[in-house]
Structures are given as C-alpha cells and as structure tokens.
Amino acid sequence: MNKPFDYPDIFYNEVIFYLETKWNRRLSDHERHVLIEGYRFGRMLEAEKEIKETG
Image (cartoon, rainbow, N blue to C red; front, side):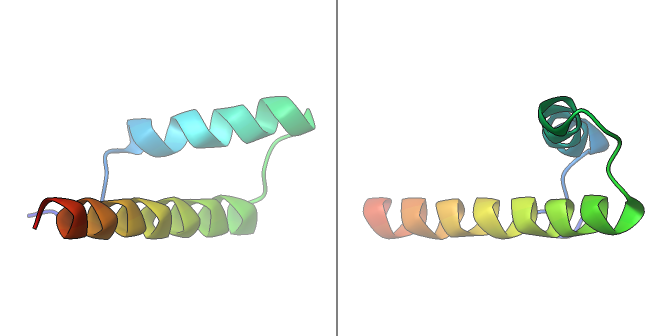
C-alpha cells in the first residue's frame, strides 16, 4: 500500500527532467532526494488548501 503523497516515479521523473534540462546537468542523488521531498510537501499543501476550500 502506498503512503499518502507517495507518487509513482513518473511524477518525480518529470520534475527531475525539467531541472536537469534547465540546469544542463545531471542532478546528484542528494538533489534528487531534496527535490522529491519538496514535491511531496508542495502536493500536500495543495491538497490541504483544496480540502479547506471545499470543506
């Protein structure tokens, strides 16, 4: 079972690809980890905001 906000790799790959293209280099493992955690956090905030707006 997936944890909340544990998205399939395809979601992360899109964000990673975007930054690697923008910065014209491959991200380090640490940068990828920070990016994924930031993505999860941002999605969590979006979900909380949507819940408050509809609740």
